[in-house]
Each structure stands twice: as C-alpha cells, then as structure tokens.
Image 1: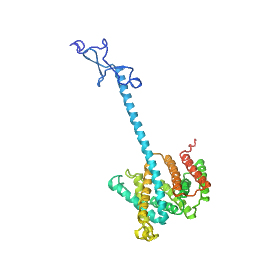
Image 2: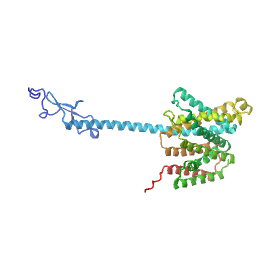
Image 3: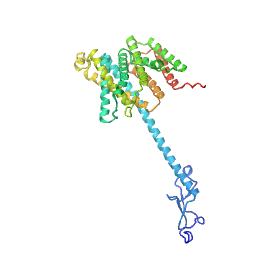
Image 4: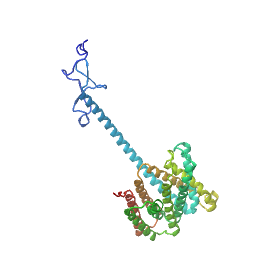
Length: 390
C-alpha cells in the first residue's frame, strides 16, 4: 500500500517557501520580527504548493508563546483598569465618610443649641438609623441577616456600650464646642491601650506607650486654653472614649460568631436597632418626649427647621458609620485608623470655620500635638514585636 506522500496527497514544504503574512503589530509588540508563517487555528501551516503539512514543533512553540503573550497583555490591561476603578471607588468612600461626618457634627450642634435634650436627640438618631436598616433589609438592598437568640444575647453588651458612647458624645457636643469634643476624643488610643491591657492581657510595646504621651499632653494643653471649657462637656467626652473603646474590647473578648450574612454593616444595623429599644424607655423616664410639635412650638422654635436639621443629622450619623464599615472591609485597620485621624482634623477645622470658634495659638498647638500623637500611634501599632529566639 502506497504512502500518502507517494501518491501526492501530502508534499513536504521544505523545497518551497512558506506563504507568509505581515504582522499587523510591529516593533516590540509583535511576536516575531517581521513576517510570520500563516498558522491555522489547529496548528497546521499552508505550503506554497497544494497540500497541507503539519507545523514543526518549533513553530508550534512560537505560536503558543505568541498567544500567551497576547493573553498576558490583555490580562494586565484589565487589572490596570480594575485597579484604577477600585482606587476611585475607595477615594469616593473616604470623601463620603468625611462629608457625612462634617454634616452630622454641624447639624447636630445646631439642634443641640436650641434643643438641649441629648437623650431625645440620640433616640431620634437611633430611630432613623433603625428605619434605614429595616428599609435596606425589606427592599433587598442589603441581605437580611440570619441571627440566633444566642448571637443577639452576645451582641447585647456591644449595643449597651454603643448606646452610651453616642449618648455621651451628644452630651459633650451640647456643652462645649465641636472642635473641643473631637480634641478630647483624640484620646481614644490611650483608653484602647489601657482597657486592652486590663481585660485582654495585650501589653503594648514601649514605642506605643511613648506615642501616647503627645496625645495626653496635647489634649491637656488644649483643655487649659479652651474658651468653651466646662467639666460636664469634658467628662462626657471622656466617658464617650471609655465606652467606645470598651465596645472594641468587648467585641474581641466575646468574639460573636458570624454567619455569612452577618457582615459588619448588618452587625452595626442590629446594634443600632437594639440601641433604639434600649434608649427609648430611658428617654421617657428621664427627659420625656421633647421632640413633639407641641413642645417645640411652645418653646418658640421653628418646627420645620428643627425637624429638617434633626433628620439630616440622624441620616448622616447612620450613613457615616455605614461608610466607615465599608471602608474597613476594603483596607487594613492601620489605613482605616490613619483615615480616622485625618477625618478628625477635617471635622475640627470645618467646625472652627463654620461656627467661628475662637481658638488661641496655644489651643491650636495642643490640638495639633494630640492629633500628631494619634497618627504616630496608628503607625507604631502595626509594628509587631519580634519573637524571642530560644
């Protein structure tokens, strides 16, 4: 039986030049110098004479290398585009975080000036936050969490300290300037280190302890020269620091077991709803309902203005904390801590400009030293002590 080559069905192509095409991509982007053999998708080349001849192993290798290079280039382009989109998205989230915080502090202070009932105002803020959370769950904007009674019981201590922390913050904002409240709240790292050492046994490094000195010193310097200083506002802000940092320590100590649907946003939403139910009866027993139309009109207040500012402040209060959790899911805790430090600077500066708060040079110096200490603390906190070698 004659072979296929003998009867002329297949002919070797070595004797004739191969059909060639000029690469549309020249220079560094081309897979080879100028012209390339015409390769079919199945790795078979066409000869100049009639007949088909399988591509040589060398050409097949070159063909694969070319396809791999093109695929890698396309993947790199997609990653670069995706990286830019993520950067822009993260920048937008940071902008919203700062913007919501600024609006919350300004409108909240305006309401507290004319309506000095911090328990009522805090309850309204939790009520609006609860309504937003329920709306997101009902409409499917955010997945509704699956949570057990045991988990709710574990979350309850977090809700209690969260309620107290926000209440003390509003009490401080009602007594002293916004800038001074946030200067005192710069001492959060001090209480974080103290409570973690007491309850978790986490001893700080010497460098972290040293970074606390400018924080404490700066807050003390700012307090001595603060025009709006009073002890009620000072101790309320300090109590806010203790309760908020207790929440962080409790969350580590209790270690609430999370289901897949119980992310940080859902956890915060559940805490907000629980805080509303915790604080509502306290409001009735202490201040009474001071946000009704009858009470506001009898006090000679502009009903529409008070309600509008209260709702905007409450919405921004919930929104900035939601955005904060969204950022935390995208960056490291250290980056989030630095962003929080910058946020405090932005809030202090904007509140001073908006309310025309009188600030002395020594007061500014104390605030600056405290905030610089917070930044230094956030940087040193990420340094892990080297394990001792045996």
